[in-house]
Amino acid sequence: MNVLLLAWKIKLPPMMEIITAEQLMEYLGDYILDAKPKEISEIQRVNYEQNMSDAMAILHKLQTGLDVNVKFTGVRVFEYTPECIVFDLLDIPLYHGWLVDPQVADIVKAVGNCSYNQLVEKIISCKQSDNSELVSEGFVAEQFLNNTATQLTYHGLCELTSAVQEGELCVFFRNNHFSTMTKYKGQLYLLVTDQGFLTEEKVVWESLHNVDGDGNFCDSEFHLRPPSDPETVYRGQQDQIDQVPDFCFSVVFFL
Image (cartoon, rainbow, N blue to C red):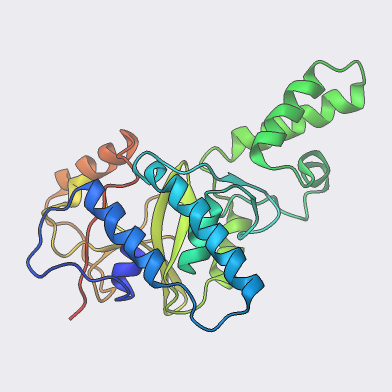
């Protein structure tokens, strides 16, 4: 919804300050119906309507979180799930940055083309194996997951910075959260939606320039704007730690 609002594809009534999750779903459902292509072939129409039906069936999950499963080979590579259809229908790119560095051969071999779920299953299987090579491979894979628990690697960050287009509005998946992301003057930024910053009018974007999550806060025009009260920073970080639901959001209008 934040991506669609920032792209002016959906508009809320003027002066609206509060909106329920149910209302958000209505706006999103209406947009999916209205966005149906007009001039397409019969086969394309049937496929689109099937995808639209599948997407509508899982819209309710947006209130609690979508099931997406990353693969470690590319920033746009996810295991296909019905939830991915929503992003396809809305034409919203979905990215992640949890990548294996291709220069680290043992990790590349251990992880292979596995998705996250498949890799966890592989680690369990390797641990139970009598083959020492498989046991070693499972250990390497497990260490990779432990060492990249932030679900963002520096190789992934470099690939993200290269892949995202200047001015593109997209969604960034990390630690079971979906964030609105854009690129401005070659730098990646995430829309700030933590409750701790609700009253900080000058805090709109946070730069994504390292894997530790301590970016710089900026206003709507990407000018550096540190919060006026240091305690606000702590509250914002604490809210993030407490896992604020993915459907909590802020609406930002650019004048």
